[in-house]
Length: 167
Ligand SMILES: Cc1cc2nc3c(=O)[nH]c(=O)nc-3n(C[C@H](O)[C@H](O)[C@H](O)COP(=O)(O)O)c2cc1C
Image (cartoon, rainbow, N blue to C red):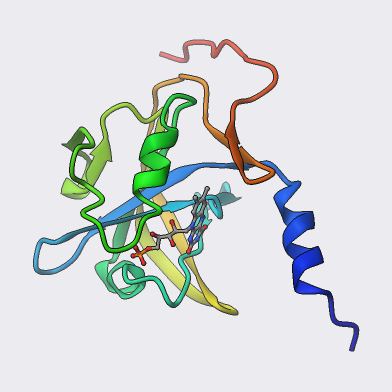
């Protein structure tokens, strides 16, 4: 069995640009949970599915698995402080970040460039992470330039596009 060197794997994956999202949910007791995630991806058009992968060791992991719904907030280019805040374990991640109640009453980031509200479709095993497959129930597109994570830095797309209105 060929095994890949972990440092080489990490270095190689750092070369791949990813989106930066803050994924939120609320547990049965009404407590808000959230974490910064670059493992977000579109999965299927019919049915409309996306996926995001929380580490099994994350304190929010079980809340996401049992909540039954989650909200993906796609960060805009100017929101790297929010990405940092929601990647910090232990602190009150929601303090000081403007939030608004969104779909299913889930906490939404007021200035996110897009939001994708999901019901939990399936939880798959992904090694040291879980793969949360979400069925997309509603979407919101603000249209600001997205934040990108590349080579362990927050950056923005090299080219900007103007989104056509779809009304
Ligand atoms: C840009 C960036 C992307 C991240 N992506 C993920 C991810 O996809 N999955 C994950 O489990 N943690 C990811 N993290 C780390 C988590 O945000 C961090 O460990 C989180 O605070 C864990 O949640 P907890 O506070 O509930 O333990 C990422 C961190 C950063 C800065």
